[in-house]
Length: 215
Length: 215
DNA sequence: CAATGTGAAGCCCTTCACAGCG
DNA sequence: CGCTGTGAAGGGCTTCACATTG
Image (cartoon, rainbow over all chains, first blue to last red; front, side, top):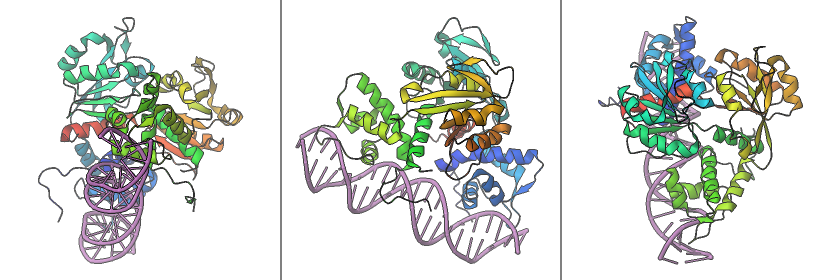
């Protein structure tokens, strides 16, 4: 008997952030034709405890078999479902500098049912260039194009000074979530989701941990 | 048995991950000649609570002035100290594809007292090319060069299939920490620190949050 | 017997609320 | 007064431990 919350029980944030990692590992197992795996096997490879893995999975509904383990394909399917990966997602990259360009060429989108459908830059010299599967468009067309292409997520790779302006623009174009690579906090209206990827921060965390020996 | 927490109180991980963000904001204030700021002012701009900010700062030693606020420059200095930014750090980038190249050209290292001193790639066609301030070196020279340059942190931007091999190599060359961009878990000996930056994961977290409306 | 799913305990972090200081 | 620093309370996540199941 599970707490059958008729309406979606909220996933703990920490669990959510581990799901893509589990998914990756399970996809690898699936590719290797592994049909069944125990929580211990999978968890060990990822550096988490088996109890943690089971607890996390229990949030997605129950389906392991005591004495045996979990069916790999079934798990992948459930995780895809939980992450919303059964639908196709449209991404835009705003800022076609070195990082934006690198992301545009990244091949990891398609396997996750995501596609970069638009790229923008302020620099007229960059406009029109083909980068990955799209052509660079001028920044002042951003509202129009994002709306037309029904872009779900904007990836911001502009300099810090421009990040807030870009955020405002993409939000008013109906974008629901932002992945922000600019090293600055951006503010958005309630209901819009922002996650920050800050390479400087990551490095500073490492330098702290090195100096204190606190792995 | 590594718990020598007898003297130095360990910084909570969550606090640590916010310090670089505080630092960034405080540097901006400092640049704007702001001398003193209250926890509320600073916290509001970053979307955290003032209590949180004060608690975090209290781990670094106490120094605000009741009724007034914090001295911006003093705070920056203390945070630099806590993060180990008073010494110079040597970084290496392993994998000179699109992402590795973008990172090599990133200008955010120097202000944090970090420098990319070596770049590696397996592809002979890339070896010798100047990227940022360094020339691409062959992968099989990695051990020798990392040791000679006393590299502290390796940034791994190779394909997933090669990440573990690279990790093993850099660890045996004496690297103390790894920033891993490959979408795969890597395992390292006790004492070596790994942080993962996984863009796919971030996007999947966003798609989940969009579909459940759970900002 | 092997491995799950989960109450219960414990830990860590955040928030509250306020005494106390400049 | 305004704002800090912090005990205490509260909430969320992890771990333990084991009854349960194929």
